Length: 64
Image (tube, rainbow, N blue to C red):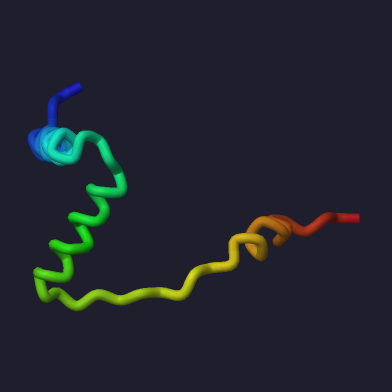
């Protein structure tokens, strides 16, 4: 398989971030939230979806 330089860069950056925070996912997410707030970019928040409605909905109609 041919190496994709973009994918390699993403993997390298992901590894650097993980090492910077010693693999602590909570710290990684908190840093991302702080950087996003400082960026001044507009963000949206969507209401949570009810998962149980999707689980109990039949995927196909029964015949017969």
